[in-house]
Length: 408
Ligand SMILES: O=C(O)CCC(=O)C(=O)O
Ligand SMILES: [Fe+2]
Image (cartoon, rainbow, N blue to C red; front, side, top):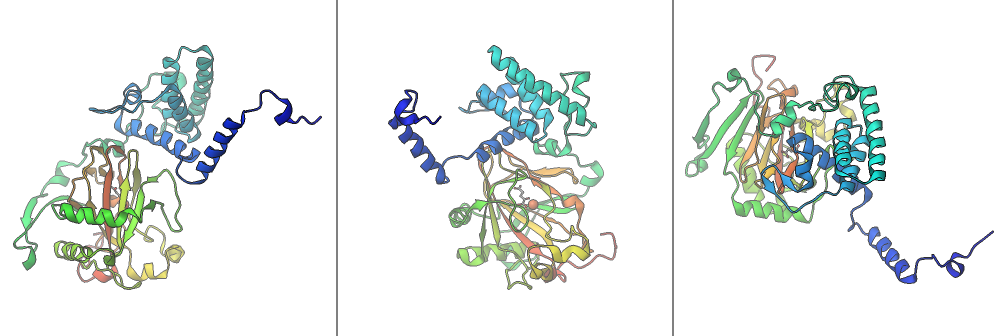
């Protein structure tokens, strides 16, 4: 039997409602409205913020972020969505904590029954896959339901803890120096060496506010969602926006490059593919929850040599050599969060507007230094801007010669 709903059913939506639905559908076609994927990403990002910064769910629900109070609020449905998305992402610890919160926060019998079922499913999956590793609770949930989740070095570094031994810190110094460069004599550079392995420095006041504004203004219209690899792959491991600026994008950029060269003693100028010393400036913008999980900034040397040609970035990438060093400007302060953390070196660097951190990704013998692994911790409050200048290997082989120690 066929029913003509329009003409016979008194439950049919009135035309005004259909018109609204149509308008929402139209609006959805443009990218202005958040998509289901955005919502899912937000839920995962909130779970990550809680885990890394050890926030109490009750504080998050009331908009308290460490010592900052915001007007943001989470409803019980939001908490359930975070639990559900964490469950789907196999983050059983988060799924358990958020669903347990939802269970205690609701008095509604049907809701309580629903959350109980979710908690039972989460607990079972957690215990079935339990192997004592850090993405699980320290024991099975059947052995105790009020456990304190594992805490990993990376998360602790993001919270500002440091893990360098006394020996590793010995000999690290702050300096004010013209770096042997005549044009830095009138404005010497203030810098501190942060680590010997990897060799790492923090340079203060290397960009003025007007230069920072010029870089951000040039980047704004070019920003797109950051990916990893080429062709770009989007995922939760990197949440930010990227813009690439050539030296021709703004009249101030060549001078900024000359400054990096003078300070580092390295060649950082862009050149034609196959003989480039420095890549275009990569500007990154992170909103709340934005982050980049730890990685080493190399393009192909993390692969065995017989697979180098498989790098999707093209043959000229290998001709230029890998990313010997990273120079990263901080274009903003960040109210809470957003440190750059080096889990193997045991150090993290807070963003300081106008400063730049620089480290070597390769050892002097050309091998990747795994201790250069680093990540951008999630932004908890504020907005983080950075700009990377990657310095390539081959144009600099005489500037940073091999050591006589084969392991260096
Ligand atoms: O944002 C940061 O602190 C780190 C960014 C980073 O590691 C990168 O862009 O490769
Ligand atoms: Fe990086």
